[in-house]
Image (tube, rainbow, N blue to C red; front, side):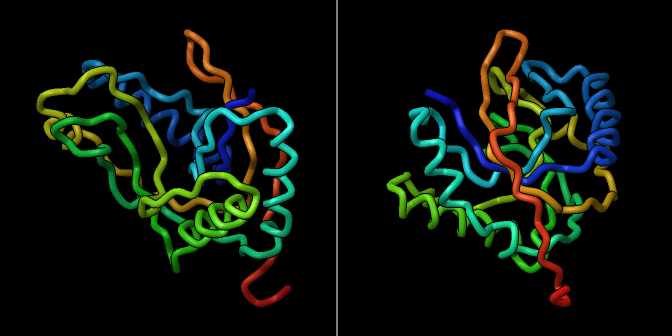
Length: 190
């Protein structure tokens, strides 16, 4: 069995910027949070969980053509928040601009394509984000901490979708790329 997810990779420049932001958040000493390692930051399009080894090829086959279906583009960070809410947070995140619904369309395409192969479809609305940390227990006054975090005004490229295997360790997850899909289609049809 492999623990699988599909994500938009973020550029190294953004990861370097987020490394500084994560250090800033760490300095706030928010209780009960485990911050993400900057090298692991991505935009999850679909989390599949445990998948039999022989189904990985089906996942890759289902995504064939995704690289020509979607445009390379730009996005930007728009806000910071917590899932499911600020009073009982599980995840601290940066919200991403879904300009023209590109991330939502990618997630829908992946959901439908994998559905043809018998994988369970997500029924929740898609919300593109970058996970910064996960909470072990609820945090009182999270809003007070959030007010101290300056939401970065940064634009980044959307150039690649990858299929990842995630292995969980005491020190945190380790992600291995199983397949990259480099987005090649341009808006002007180049």
